[in-house]
Amino acid sequence: TQLLEQSPQFLSIQEGENLTVYCNSSSVFSSLQWYRQEPGEGPVLLVTVVTGGEVKKLKRLTFQFGDARKDSSLHITAAQPGDTGLYLCAGAANNTDKLIFGTGTRLQVFP
Amino acid sequence: GAGVSQSPSNKVTEKGKDVELRCDPISGHTALYWYRQSLGQGLEFLIYFQGNSAPDKSGLPSDRFSAERTGGSVSTLTIQRTQQEDSAVYLCASSLGGVAETQYFGPGTRLLVL
Image 1 (cartoon, rainbow over the protein chains, first blue to last red):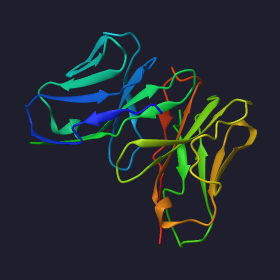
Image 2: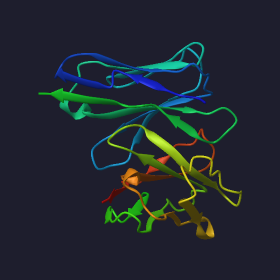
Image 3: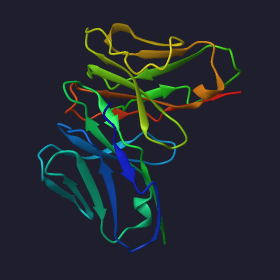
Image 4: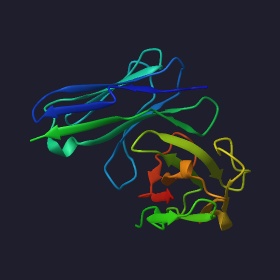
């Protein structure tokens, strides 16, 4: 069974701080996605990474896919209250059209 | 254009009753997914429809759960004889098909079984 573990589970920080969220698995994924979910809404896709070692930047967010395609990280620089939400990683299960979602990281950024 | 819509937004029911949850995907999207999310945690895959292919039901937790997709568009998730542990947010997503395509999520239906 393919599983994705995220850490930390909860994160409360002050505006302006940097943070990193980790998504780890013992399984290889063909691609990996990061979503953000706000209360009362469905998750919204932030980025998809497909190549081992790939780094993608989205404004203050930097996403990295591990060389072995088993793990990923999300780094946020100078966090803002608008970054508050539930961050989910999701991996494409091998030979299927299903996504395996991680356990989630709940981020709270205080002004 | 319109996004994925789900109804009802909230549902409170008594243990043992049946419930139906509806999902209207984005027009033209051939793939439709149902997920369950408990207490703001990660998403648990339930079922996947792709075009006219047989659905992937591998995530349904018990035979009390079933889903259908009529005319390749609207989908209904039915939970029979609801139990308290069925309480969760049920999310629907649609895409153009294939795991590489972006999944667009609806706002979810919050189900509470008393």
